Length: 36
Image (cartoon, rainbow, N blue to C red; front, side):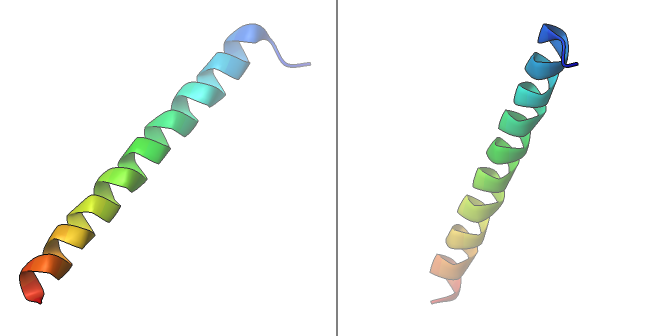
């Protein structure tokens, strides 16, 4: 049985991971732009 707090925790960690992925992708794009 999932509690409300557990759902919020999972959602929060997911959004944190997504933000991290977006940051890494943008850093990679910047590096690629500088290389070319």
